[in-house]
Length: 146
Image (tube, rainbow, N blue to C red; front, side, top):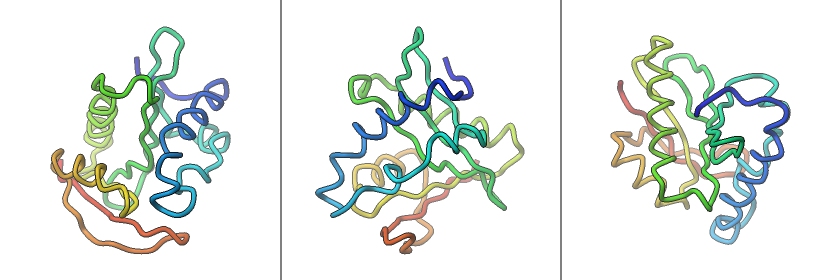
């Protein structure tokens, strides 16, 4: 079940972030951007949704309003729940949220070293728009028309 995150979910979100992004530290040479976020503040501000299965958070997504598209700011699935289609469910949710909000596109970014993510997003219809450095991280920006 998808639902808005609340303060009680922050610890589970942080645990998923740690488990999902730690493997990239060696490849990137530092912690990926999602490991540096303040999830308490993000949840309080809204835009964070969790995938809750019988009280267990198995994934989350952060969606933010942007000028001309909904920004899929972060998406992660608990490692023990990967391979069950939950990432696809979260992506579908994001695209539906964008449509419901009247956006004609959804955009995201990922680290250039996360090549498997780039391939996944490309298969879902996202197209690379540009690459840039932000906060010392090399990012690939992608967009999908809806």
